[in-house]
Length: 261
Image 1: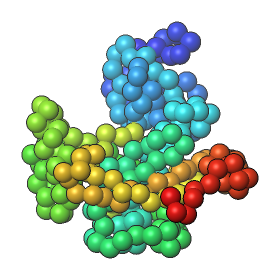
Image 2: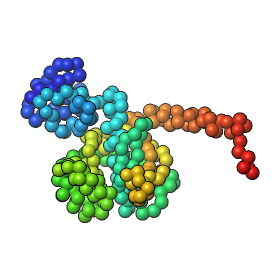
Image 3: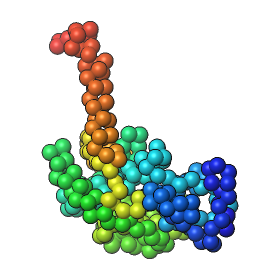
Image 4: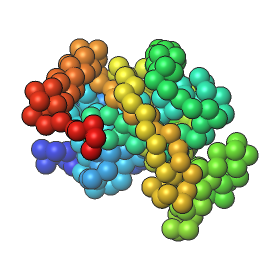
């Protein structure tokens, strides 16, 4: 089989070769740095097989937004695992990467506050230090329905049923140690490659965005490759908050709210 590289050159690989195989064929340095592979418009795990004729680009920590997407997606799973450890009985909703970070929605047995953040962040650090592999598996929608139903993961059951209604025959799951989540991916090879994570805020969010559905707790967070970049981001956020026109205008007396009004 043959794949096309970003410079237009063609790389011959054995039938069934993976993204990691392609990176290794290009060079050992790239194989060591690789975290994922872009195939057309899709970013995939390195372990997934490639197809003949694919146009690929190996994703490394130097790949900008592509790298941050994969790393933060993995960080969202790590945070979900940490929340379930710190708050037993927490049920999982969704946890996608977003601009400058990620979030995860939870159905919690008790309210969570920012006072819980240190314990959750400590558990996140422990999971990262364990360097547990992210392992992808594929399951039929019928088996996935039964699997999550037995675990009491009602929101995952709802998602599986929705995918089945859309004609999907299989779904993918990701595991690191005993933590399992329904997810399309991609993810890093292991939790040890997740960078520095910081929990930011809490908000409410309806399941699937409908007020007719249960209200979940959304925890916002961010992740950067190292502490220096995380600190620089947090400093920019703090400076923007200090320059917020609503705060500055009030402090300078440019506008005010009449107490009688």
